[in-house]
Each structure stands twice: as C-alpha cells, then as structure tokens.
Length: 180
Image (cartoon, rainbow, N blue to C red; front, side, top):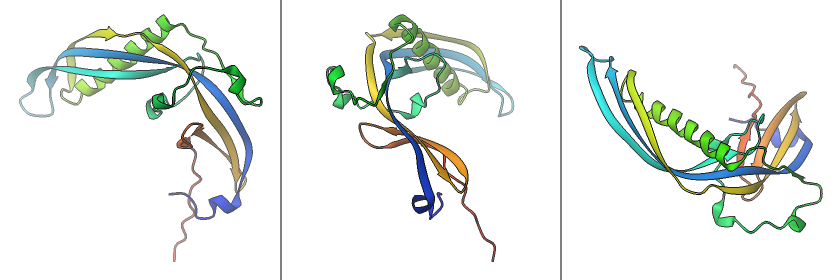
C-alpha cells in the first residue's frame, strides 16, 4: 500500500530513541451480561459470561498517546534495569502514574473491552458487571524509536520497537494512481 519510490524519495528528518515507562498488569476478568438481541425478530433476551486472562499494558505517562493495544512488550527480552546501558542521546521517561492508578486504568480498559465483546452478542446491554483477579503489576521501560520523515513535501511519523525493529505504527503516504 506504500508508494514504490518511498524508500528512495523520503528523507528522515527526526529519529529519537525514547525509553517509555509501562505498567504490565496481569489480571483475569469475568464479566456477566444480560441484554436484548434486536437484530432478529422478535427481539430476544440473552445473557452470558466473558472470562479472559490478560497481561494488560498501561502507558505510564498521563497526556500521551501510544498504541498500547498494538504493542506486545517483548517480556522474554526483559533484563534488570541498568541506567549505564541507556544510550546517552536517548530520552528516558519516568512514569507519571503509580501502580494503583495503572491497575485502575487496566481494569477500566478491560471492562470496556468486555462490553465491546458482549455487544457482539447483544444489541443492547441491560445489565453488566465485571469482577477482577489482579496480580502484582510490573513496572518496566521499553526502547522505542520515534521517527519523522518527509516525502513529496509532507511530513509523516513512525514508531519502531527498539527491541525487535518492528514498525508499531507509521503514517503511509497515499499512492498516486494514474488512470490510463
């Protein structure tokens, strides 16, 4: 879906390594729901249970956007923190939230996710409740490259996992289609 000449005609204008703080919250959530399935006639009452275990990732920064749902922290590459191994030009960001706030945030997001899943089964929820079993949250930092590049006079952004090199999110310039 990217233009064929993107690699040749783009220019990296900013490349910055940042160590972002995350809370990894292991939890099991059980949601019970009741609702009405209205897409069939006559409407019918339904109820069910959604139970899943998660390692829910919470960004440790307050007014920041990051695609946490798209990012799988490479836990297998986890090493004890050693500040002397952080690249000198890297930006190292500390968490702005405590573990209790991270756990509350994870619970809220998981409950919203379970409501989304329940709404796949019913059109209107009439009753919904969730219980949680939460294990100890883990505080960690992950290396991420933030890049900005120009292509044909416009600026685009990308986020790259510093551990694996995988592109987490990137703006892709539109392809110019020519009609014959």
